[in-house]
Image (cartoon, rainbow, N blue to C red):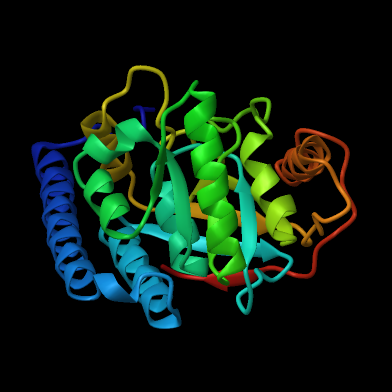
Length: 274
């Protein structure tokens, strides 16, 4: 009997490249539109209308690159300020979280110069931090605290880098002090990526010396990806140290990703397509 292995034909390859080109073109259009909208509404930064704009822009960008978002666990604190603490896998993390909670982010200063992502990050009020500089960390910590006090939501990635999704790096606790200073809860979020059939995937990972163009090409090559966000219960910060908060958040994320013993939490999943 002959082999049943399917070998891609010229037509198959042409179709795949056409699909990728269409997605890339749509992505460029969405970024241009989001940038234009953000310029028109720059004075509305932090308002409910601005958050809705972030959610809509992030969702459209994810749709352009065929990424869905699946939300699990505790309901995000949509009504009030919160410091969201997440593990970091990809530049898509920001878009996935932005589509669900319309929040501000803290990112390394290099992100400002990235194509597409850097433009959107700058326009949507991202706080940029110089890694390895304590004085700059203090500046950003104070800025986060001020935003939390005024009712905004902020996401931090305390690993300080991205991983391939198969592990969670140690957490740097410095920025979590902002939640203590502002007497605002923190909420852990576990981030991972799957193929449409549920298989875990590293296609979204943005690690090592990979360029943004290389990472984008890997994402566009997949028929569809799912960004799975698992929210833990809020942790009140007032009576805790920043190291305690970091340890609790990391423990939940490890558990949610199946890397540690289960942490008891979590109502049923809610599906949201980007």
